[in-house]
Length: 215
Image (cartoon, rainbow, N blue to C red; front, side):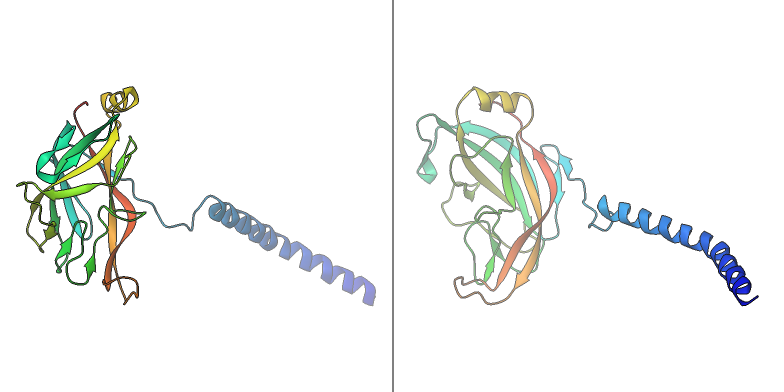
């Protein structure tokens, strides 16, 4: 009698528990698939494609492409392309949306923007490869370092040396050349090797600014 009762109890438990365990296994399997396909990863924002003249806004700055040209030299900046290269010169309107003055390349006071310098600049040429470092200056032709005051738009010229070849011409003809504009976050903290204690660190790609023209 005792063995029969124990068997009946186990049978009853198994029948009642089966739906629960089936549901639990199904939920675990769904959760594993959700995580495996990146369900818990941060949502990535699709970068906006911005036409010439339109403004792209990030957390700390805004930018609009005003003009694109190609040249062998910029005499006012003592800048000259190497043989087999040309200078892609883009005029942009930049506005500093933070509350502290910041330089486009050189850092005023204790703020470093890294807009054009470093391994992860905020503004990066895409679609063609730059063959050297970018240079920037004020659109009025002066050689002073460009410093963006809070809330004051500034027209800035940026030059990238690029290859003067058929591949470059084809990339521009296909509309594949752009400036990738990355969002930025302020990172504070004294750094021994740098005078800056506030650095704009590159975050996600926010916008892709189209460049028109042909070399």
